[in-house]
Length: 151
Image (cartoon, rainbow, N blue to C red; front, side, top):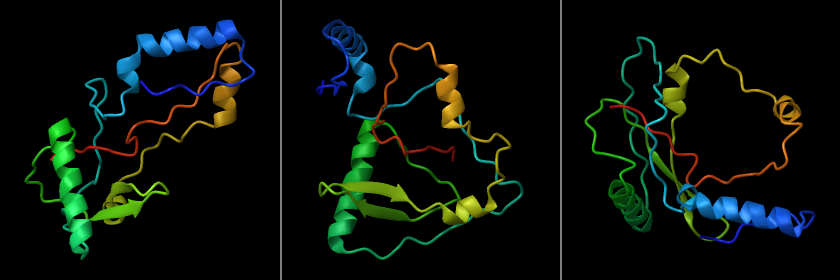
């Protein structure tokens, strides 16, 4: 497990407690993405016809990177082959460290998606509700921007 960055304002006992907690839940902090059976998400497109967006032209190097990412995701079990009528193009976004973000351009899908009537809660209000909390952490989810859809 990677080292956890702790605030220097924490005492030794607090640091030990957090490290023990992180160690006991080490599988939750895996650098490899996984799946959950605890939530299901669907996208309501109303009565819209399926959108078949064409893939973007990419360089041979980008094509190799896309194929590698797809194979990795298949091996991890986070995607599966599909015969859906809905398609959206892949976009590779370079990260500062030279790696890439494998993304999908869902602009056309978003245009026909019926919005949820549940606004995001305000961060200030959420923090106020946790006023008695001993610790507040920031988590950087592994590939947290990934979403899956049925199809």
